[in-house]
Length: 82
Image: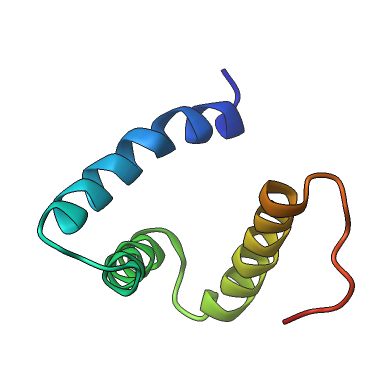
């Protein structure tokens, strides 16, 4: 199994583990995003060398935009940036 397939396989379980208790306790979308912020910050501390945050963050956000566009728009390309 390649890395992307492995990541996509484990992501749903990780998402359930993170989100279900928050939602069960009345959490909002904002609460979910704050929890995700904690996870991303922890991953950066574990995986990104000091001084490399900006470029890795930029690549991650660009890839996130691409994945959200694909999920929401199918094959259509968005016109511009929000």
